[in-house]
Image 1: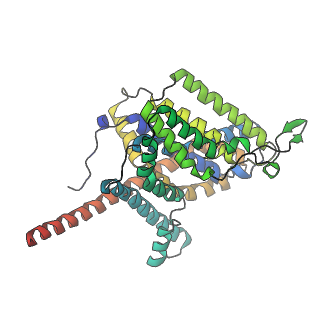
Image 2 (image 1 turned 135 degrees about the horizontal axis):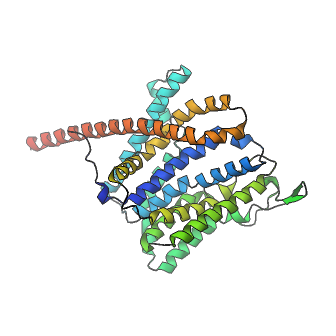
Length: 379
């Protein structure tokens, strides 16, 4: 029997699985705004304020994944077993890429040759959402050495110093370098556009933001940071509202301003992601039904595949939505239908790909065992 043994939910931290589920659902929610024309719409009115605030909240998606990576992997060391852990990620990516290529072939009536397909898989263009895989592979390879740096710091104060340094390099520029000549609209004084911004501090190292989230996750894991649930929730809601107001004012009567402060390396996702991570981490989920725990666990296990293959269903569904609902603001009402549909379809396809990957590993394992037995007999 080649089916992988089901891991008991009792041995897992269901809170971490819940965080991963929220993160992948947030990715699909961010794509809702990417594909529905939101970024071409002029920002004015309550509906655009609400949509902008929604988009801002869902930008916690990748930061949550990275904080979780630091939380779980901060003790990993260099070993053959560690590096073999990358196989599962890469096989998932390859299978998702093949699924996307099949979709492209059917939808465009274009056949992809074997050589072309291999090239597209190797250069991460076969699955259009695979930028995350490129980033994660690099992070995965660095993790044992990053851990030497982090765990080599012996005191809490030193580790706080490391995190402050990383925040200064990657997040602080999103606070300091976004100010410039103001503009006045209908008597309201608003910040100037990006063309008028003045750089105050260096922003050369902002691309290291994945490491910042990794170290935050490692620190939370080691020191079990806690905020009272009520205070945590209030901080989360108030921060989200204030950031929503700020972004609305920045973009008012222009298209929505996407910049460092509200992107992955920005102050807004950093605060929201840490607060949400801590809130979910310390929720008491022990009493939820076992069937629900099993569902959460399974979705968590399939989250990478869900993310990668969701492009197929985004590409199928959003053109139809946009053609049917002409006014972009009215498309907001379809969020509660579209995103769950994309999620369920992606979950189903990811499950099929996971089943295939288990079969591949089973076959490889059988062949390896046979070869090993043959070598033993030849001795």
